[in-house]
Image (cartoon, rainbow, N blue to C red; front, side):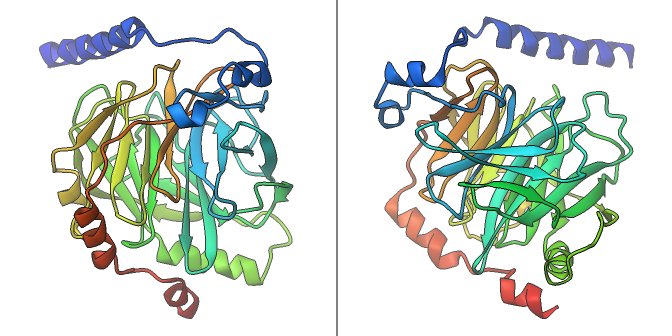
Length: 341
C-alpha cells in the first residue's frame, strides 16, 4: 500500500508540474474593452474575447443560453455568493441571476438544456477537494432571461450523495434525450466513475414548484446518484453534452476530448469506453469551464480578470455521421411525459 500511495503522489506531482510548465498565457489586468479592441475579430480566429464582467474572477462553470442564442452564463468558483453572470459572445455583460438563499460552498460547474419548449439550467455545488462532504447540491430551474437581472426563488435544491462515499467533482452535463444528469469525479488517477441522476422525477418536482410557488425556501430533495460507468481520464475539470448528437465533451487541464455517440441512445457506459477525439485547449491560464452552443461549437472560459471566453478548434463530424445522429435521436424524456406524471 505504501508503494501504491507513493505512486499516486508522484502522478499528482507530475500533473501539477506539467500544468506549471505548459507555457499557458496569462494576461495582466486591464479592461476587457481595451483587450478586445486589440483583437476585433477574436471570435472568428478563436483568439479570446475578454468579458466585461469584473465580478467574474474565477470562472468555474459555463453554459450556453437556450433562451437567447449567442449568450452565455457563468459563475465563480468558491468564495462568491450564489449568483450567475450573463454575457454575449462579444464579451458584453447582459444580465445576472441571484439564487436567493441557495448555498455556494464550492460551485464547480453548470449546464443548460431544453425539453419541449422549456429551457433549464443546472448549477452544481459539488466541489470537494478533500473528499469529505457528506452531500453536494444541485440547483435546477428554468433559465431566466440572460438580458435582465433576476432574483430567483423558484428553484429545486437537490441534495445528492454518491453510492461509494464523497468525491470531488468539477464536471456536470445534462442529456435530456436519455434523461440523465451526468457527473464526473476528478482525480489525478486516470480511473474515475461517472455518476448519473434521473432527470424526469426532478423536473416533475420543479414543475410542481412552478405551479405552486413556495412561500419560503423549500427543503432540498434528497437523491442518490448511481454509477454510470468508468472513465480513463485524469483531472477532469469540465464537461458538456451536445443534445443534438449526444456527443460528450470532457476537458481536463490539457485537452478536450469528444466521446461520439452512435446510435443516439447508446448506453453512456459504452460511449465513454470508446476512443475519444482529442483537441488542444486555448493557451489560457486555467480552464475549468466548457459548453456547447446551439450550433455545436465548443466554448471555454478561464480563471482571471477579465475572464477570457474562447472557442475551441475541434474535429468536424462528417455530414453522414451528423445525419445519422439526428435520425437516431429520439427523445426518451419529453416535456409532455414529465407534465403527465
